[in-house]
Image (cartoon, rainbow, N blue to C red; front, side, top):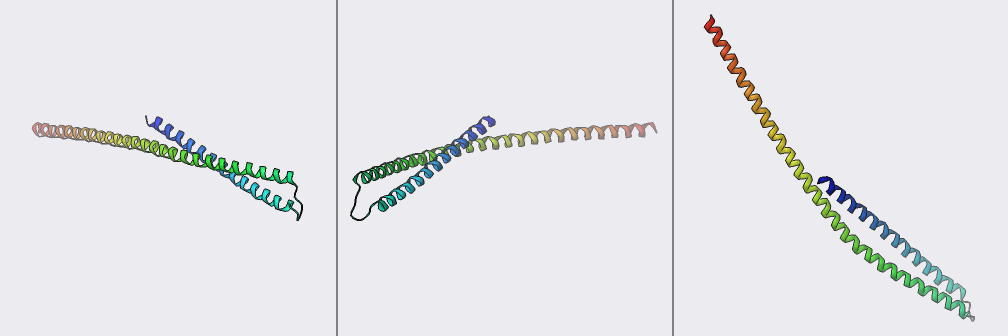
Length: 148
């Protein structure tokens, strides 16, 4: 049973680790998207010279910026979702660890009781042997006294 609970805890650890990797990936993607927004904004500013505006290029830039902003919003939503799942999965991991520790403590208590019982038996056997030796020695002493 303890082995099963350990396996369950290990499975939850892997799930949490995987979720953390997913969150890191989404964060990295968000940072990359934000850099792209900054780069695109700089490109728009540099592309505008005083007095001339290329309408097609301005439309392309604005369209690309809208796409990047939507991707950022989608990424933020995914990040919040993953964070919420992580909270649930960490709670499940905590519960699995708690259940494993309960069984470990039970096993330790059972082993302690077993050892105490074994010690009682050993003590009883040693007492019995000491009593037998004592009786045997006393009986031998009587025989020696009677035979003298």
